[in-house]
Image 1 (cartoon, rainbow, N blue to C red):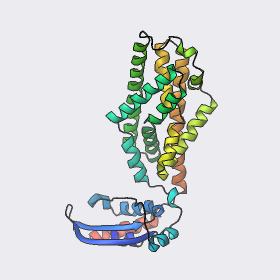
Image 2: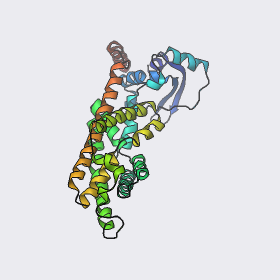
Image 3: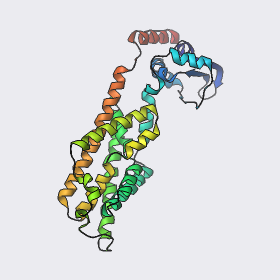
Image 4: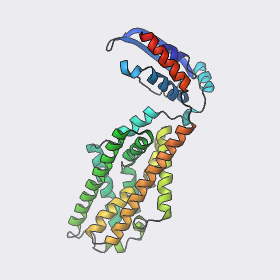
Length: 307
């Protein structure tokens, strides 16, 4: 039944069947070549057939396929591969980036330290470097996926990564700034002379607009697997610089500027998540779903096969 569902699915180019090839669990192995834009609908069929309960589903993307059958299958599939949303793929990708790991904490701490150095030295280059190093988009994207899919376990994991990561990074940046003042590494009035960093603690309408645009672009890059676009998102929002500014400003007693940068941080976090959720919901609306009649027929066939 699974083999027939795969072979008859629109967009399938080739199928191979290896009887008894699987040892643990014992069973058959099926390999198919299918157009990317048809993958999500096929996964819905396999979910109805409960394939993942008795075996596993592995998805990989070849770098190059030279096949007339593949070209024909892709042309017959609705939509375009670059616009295809595979929910399990996006959930898995964002889920990996949302874990509170030592590497995540290390990158966030390093990014916040770079931002703090850029702030006290009035160095735009260091601030941009901090934006590029910051790993915060991973849990933000995971939080958006969790809200769009109702995956509260993923949402909790992403929220913990953000709720723990930012305070730890900001606390260490504040400690570094506190130790640097008596050492004479920067003057106590440094925040009053740094014109290049004023955008961090002066949130305005464009702060939210940039965050929304960045969140949409970031989620689109995740869906379309375009890492270059994702790097562009990292260096367009001031989440990490705002966190670093809060730390430095609190140490130096600049509470009004600290409040402004904290509000900037909040605007960016909320704007990114809201925009990312909107992109996912839009794709859910425009994506072709498995018809309920087809799902009922597959369930009936499954029950009849199992007796």
